[in-house]
Amino acid sequence: MKRITFLNMLIVSIVLLIAGCSNDANSEGDNGGGDKVELRMSIVAGTEEMPGWQGIVDAFNESQSDIHVKLERLPGSWDEYNQKMTAQIAAGDPPDIGRIGVAYMPMYSSKGQLEDLSPFVESLNKDDYFDSIFTKYTDGNIYGAPIGIYTLAMYYNKTLFDEAGIDYPPANWEEAWTWEEFREAAEQMTEGSGGNKQYGAYVDFFPERSIPYLWSNNGGLINEDMTDPIVDSNESKEALTFLQSFIQSGISPTPAETETMPIDQLFKTGRLGMIVDGQWTVPSFAEIDSFEWGVAPIPRSTNGEAVTPNFIDKYVVYKGSDHVEEAWQAIEFFMSEEAENILVDHGLGGIPILKSVAEERESDMFNPLNAEEKEVLYQSVEYSREVPFTNNWQEVMNESMKKFDLVGLDELEADKAADELSPILEELLQEANQ
Image (cartoon, rainbow, N blue to C red):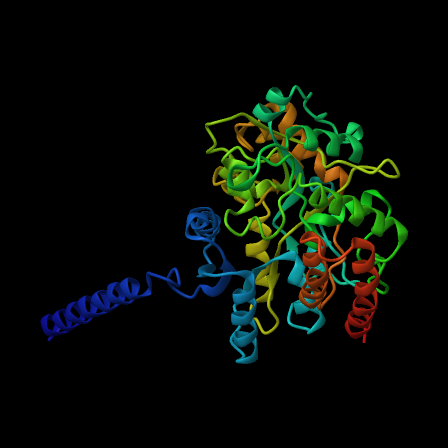
């Protein structure tokens, strides 16, 4: 009897052991095993960016015993990402964590689609981070945690400067070129005609690119309170007229002329002297081997100071997540030194939000720029301002470009375009603030 009992017990033990191994095997995979909380994280990103984003997610998962994040890449543009997120939210199946472009944050927050992260953010040591990266919205809440800091600066072709005998612009925002110095240099580098024409500079009327010129002349598109348009102020008109003069004199290509060759390619082929763009262009420009290039502050009006917009994308927790606290734990890790260093390793995120990482990794970033030029990009954070994004910013942009495109094509005078745009923006702002 004892022998039968022992055999029975042995068989039961073996069966249980096999079953346990089978369950362990089946639990390995996307959910990381066991009773872990499974979080979905959706981002828009190119395939070349995924090793970096997957790297921080993997690092978090390896540090956890109770939480597992599954990263979902949604290919396409920000507009396509927003459409997909809107559909998932409407269907009651949003991801837990998202990455949202800063221009679209008010659209989501105004619709109540994001969790208020204020209680979590307030627990952070703000001294560890750069100032003004935690955006409060009109209701006083914080709906996103910063990823990295992108700003604009002026990239220029040193070889064309040398050939024209022009001194390089100062690598210091306090000593930024004036508009007059900028225009004079552009004129000297402009030569030729037709398909081989060399342009001194490119002026971009896209609102997020032209706004530093308006700001430095004490103007703008709309006011900081997002209640009134100021594009029709004398200061704004003066800035827009200055930009249009580059088109009228032929020292900048028109939007139509850039249709055959994208503007970044025009610069990379050596046919463009100066272009204002973001740090995200550095990896592409680093491939240039036919000429030397550098970076300088954006030229300023003599009526104001040099300034640049900042673009700080956000980590968010979508409303409807059943695991808000766990999602914050993941986001807090993504803001840590370990995660920020992974992003730097892969050239993602712009300037790190942590001062310590930005300082320690300066030599690893923005290569092949020299130390002085890298400092231009780091300094830019101190001279940056937030664009006053409204919750209907896409409509503001679309209506603005209808007028600005005509200015860029020299089919409408800049001051008249500003006068025609102002009442349109006023109506859009009224809708946004209802």
